[in-house]
Image 1 (cartoon, rainbow, N blue to C red):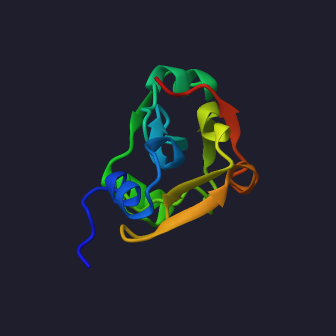
Image 2: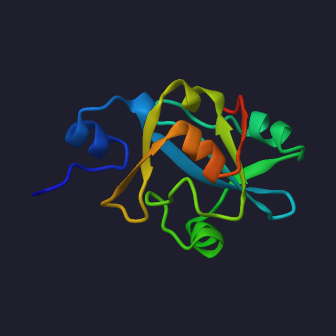
Length: 131
């Protein structure tokens, strides 16, 4: 079976779910090069100013593919939302869902997780970080 392209389009087409049920785990770096994992729904983007404010830092930037691999052991597009010893911030819109789908460790796998478990397992702070 040929899989549809893209980490967001693939689960939408295969599972028949909407973008707001998909989560994106995006690694950022602060000005001291500390990693921060931001989790938002598939229909949203991370507002870097809001993320920096929540983390009490001046500025954040998206991590490079090399930095993502170094700090998490995963490739971009496969990054699971849990299992990291990294500061994690979940956008409050994620918690509107009971269950969400995110990176499962490879580009061809998904993790289905209850949002209450996501928050607990990621030891995450929940705040407004989406634009």
